[in-house]
Length: 254
Image (cartoon, rainbow, N blue to C red):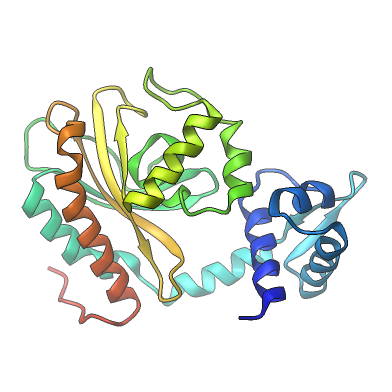
């Protein structure tokens, strides 16, 4: 694989995930690149129209062209249609609310959901948002961000419940645990009394593009049950990923 291309994409991803323009020194330090290489990569992104220099601070940010590229991809990929049959299976197996989420900066956006048939269940809205570090689907996607991006986020965590992880070192350990286990858990970190389990959905290149997960009352989704639930969630996420990559037949949507 072309090493320069890989580093250029890592740089582009870091700029895309940042909420503010970044300077050459900060980018180089976070990514472990030399300053001269970082400057050359930035100039290449500027020449292609994917980044711009922000004056007078001499920092850099992505342009709308990156959004246009993503929009063009999404126009031909309906993740909801691919995921819906598998989400239905997951709902039938667990009887808990099933979510399909994507990342938008440091927030998750719920692009689809199937409600639990139980009278007491987790409530959310399609199109609703939540801080990614507080919910299972968000954590399942964040864990595969580059180290520099995670370091940057770790010092900006805001508490939303008594159980929200806000300590940087604890957060980074949690991200490492998720990568090792293949799934994320939420123990009342967004809304106290509501827990969740989620796993990442990947595209054909192996990039994390979404997450599928369960949420419900903490009385039912106890941490002791996470591993059992995670097995079903991981299987659903893997099947959705295979369907997106074209490795599995798509079943009709009912």
